[in-house]
Image (cartoon, rainbow, N blue to C red; front, top):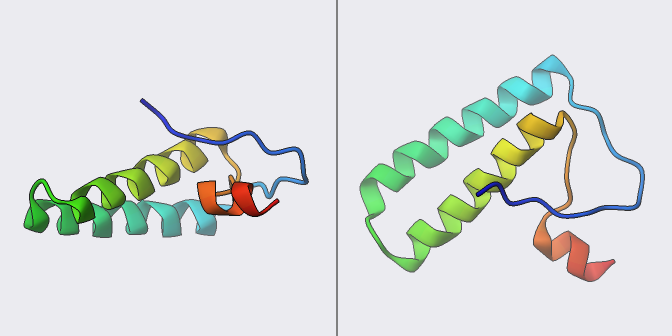
Length: 71
């Protein structure tokens, strides 16, 4: 399941550099996931990974759950 959050404000369209950075972050998280097993850290890393994938699919930056709760 892709996790993303509704956002009423201005969105930031991803540039090719943004997309590359997100793909690198996902690859880094994948490496950490391989090392940590089924712990709380694993769940948090998966949450972060789903959010980054959702941004790639949407083609724009999406607020994190924490940012959405602050608004």
